Image (cartoon, rainbow, N blue to C red; front, side, top):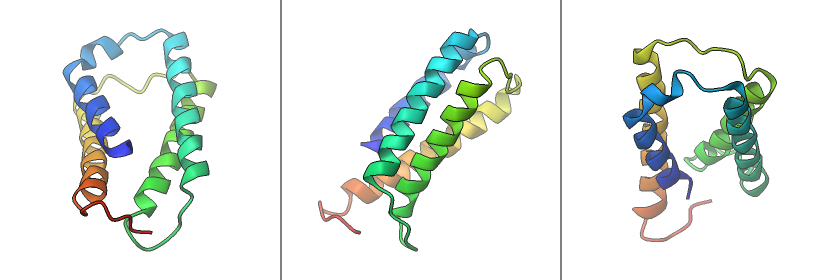
Length: 113
């Protein structure tokens, strides 16, 4: 679920980056709350620390939870309007989603853990 979700979210954000330039702090806070809950759910369900690829799922959960907390506690903080940096971040998350999707769906349905 994480891989395809990250792909869909990043593609839609990349196509609509202009609408995120002037978000109200309440929207940023809500986004942070959703990210925190989603990240914490991933951590609770998949807290795997190994030297294999499944650790990427756990790290995704921790990253989402940390980013969510940051947005909840500092909803008015501006991340800057550097368009190139936003596209770079979206590209990295898209790559992570693609990697997780490939590992989850290209393995013939076998779960590796």
